[in-house]
Amino acid sequence: MKGRILEAARRIFGEYGFHGTTTRMIAQEVGIDISTLYYHWGEKRDLYEAVVLDIYEDLRRKLIDVERLVHGKPLTHRMDLAIDEMTDYLFENPEISNLILFRYFAKTRHASPLDFRVPEFMGNIAHSMGLVADKKQMPPDARMKMLAVMNAIHNFVSGQHFFLAMLDMDREEYLARVKETLKFVLIPAFTRDHAAGPVASGQKED
Amino acid sequence: MKGRILEAARRIFGEYGFHGTTTRMIAQEVGIDISTLYYHWGEKRDLYEAVVLDIYEDLRRKLIDVERLVHGKPLTHRMDLAIDEMTDYLFENPEISNLILFRYFAKTRHASPLDFRVPEFMGNIAHSMGLVADKKQMPPDARMKMLAVMNAIHNFVSGQHFFLAMLDMDREEYLARVKETLKFVLIPAFTRDHAAGPVASGQKED
DNA sequence: TGATTTCTCCAGCGTTTGATGGAAACGATA
DNA sequence: TATCGTTTCCATCAAACGCTGGAGAAATCA
Image 1 (cartoon, rainbow over the protein chains, first blue to last red):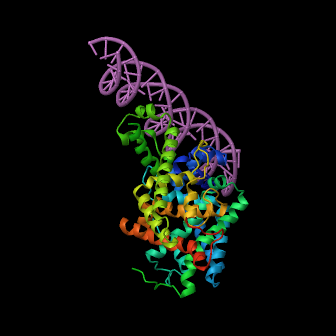
Image 2: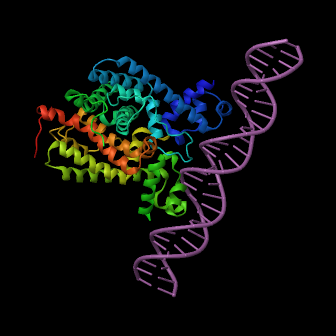
Image 3: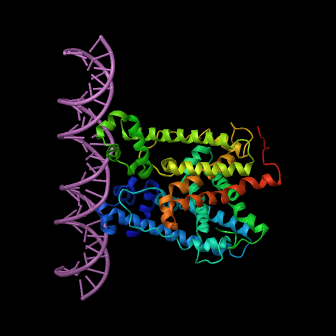
């Protein structure tokens, strides 16, 4: 039951955000009384935080999977594959993108106790993209680039309903074009230096 | 007064979203009674829609300005300048980015009557970036690329508080790194074909 | 000046919201 | 079967919410 509530809460919080979601909406989605929800999860904010931790954990696992999948392949092919994989995955679990963007952008009326943690697994991805030599230590510019990449995907996933109507496509075409666009925009930036020479950590920073 | 309310509403809606904002918060920000707010703007949703139209108009004007500013310059320089200009502008008016992303991603509990319109002024930008020959007719792939570019900027503006804490920088350094990162990610994609040969549909300066 | 319109606020309405106490139903064990 | 801990729901609360009627202040014009 506790799990079923969490699952429903992911979807609803993902669609409507924290303030847009009511505990009654979640209870109704599960088909239970709201006091059952409170029995299992305590107050709304606690449930929300559990949801956030849950989706971060899912994303972390997926990123590790993808990293393993593309390991050893040449950079361009690696990015190509990673973009395909991540886009497919997030389109199947759009609440992940939604909730992540919500946490980035939307203030809640009450301060959030969930601290700002740099997801440490980003280090692996950055390494895999040739941005850093040391997985543990990620210089600020590499973090910025990682954010740009991840956000680019999240945007197209989260905004799908809006953009679908805006662009007048069906879902399938949209998904294909998202991948195409992401590759068009992202790959050249991370491969051009590679063609000329190794980038690693040295690329005259500061 | 009507204008002062709109201005405050922009800020508050931008920070907290539609459901996260209460009419009392806006009234308090202006320093008036909430019924004064209702006298001037009617129901909450009407005020919200007025705010959305207002920020779209501001953004439209700024994009036209920027297009004029970079007109005629070589493509790389053009994008460089445009990124600087737009980033500075949106950092000074972060509620624009916030509200645009909110509209993309967040569902409101009640259906929004504001229709999904492709901002027609995007045609100018796309033309300026060498993506389309005809400003009026924008093929889907060009629209997708425009979205990717605009969203990349909005992300860094809207997420500034989160990312600032995440990256442990001060605002000034962050602003500089945002520009740097945007240029790193965006420029190669739109200039590589240029260096090698003519772009898709034929590039024209007027 | 007084009459008319425009604006602002006080007080409060009906509803929704987050949250709880207590009783009943359930399930395992002995 | 009786016992005990766990789970679920009904009824309800206080606060916050969107929103409004009506009285008075301020501005406009005769």
